[in-house]
Image (cartoon, rainbow, N blue to C red):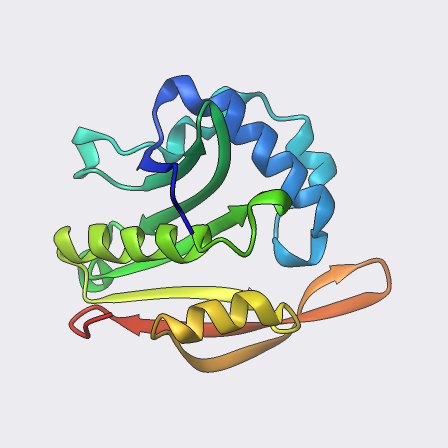
Length: 176
């Protein structure tokens, strides 16, 4: 179902499209992200340069994008801590697929490509957090082999309402 969709690393020329996708995702599902839409909307696209792989830091972090023609329809970022003792662990952040493109396997394809890149770069574990009541995302991650190892209660607060985050891990020596 991902026919006609191109997956590729994000480049500097993609920053405006990335920001537009991110701003829309934050506005649509505020409970799904720790960043808030209002603050992020004020950031210029160039502030996302840090999500591009750089040779100076071994290619970390990296952001993979999904394109339908000239339109950016999805993205995921993988970060890694630079400290030696935890440098084998990556963190999946900012997973998003625009609403009209959902249900076509794009999120799964992005996550699979992210796992492959993390494995190629020598990581042993990938972690992520996902809003507990986001059952579509929780099911996607679990279906790809991520396992819940904990829950952070009241992780997100929007007004008077709290949302919990499931903490998940994937062992990269497992096959998907």
